[in-house]
Image (cartoon, rainbow, N blue to C red; front, side):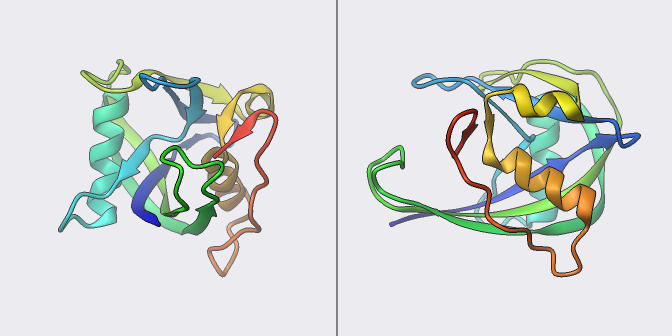
Length: 156
């Protein structure tokens, strides 16, 4: 089994739109996701989310609060490497404080776009987007929301 610890930014502007990153991998289909990614060895997830926002979007940001943690296991048949994969995602409410949007240099984020929240449902997106929005909109005391089913427009 493979394992990944990741930190994700949920940037909601005025309760109306969310910052999404267009992830275009070298292989496979593109998908919209939240800015964020893997926590480096010895890195704090709090620091990782700010680094990832800057790398992927060009924006400077600050963490406002911890929203919650999501743990999901992707079965081998659906995982990229063909072995079961566990992803533990730490979701933060993040506020953009400066910078300018740009593609990720030498990376897989082609663009970052402020997307009206009602429009998200029509996008081919990572399940992380739905988890992050559910955490931001409901703010559960436990920091946990029910698992998001994948299929159709929602991908792992």
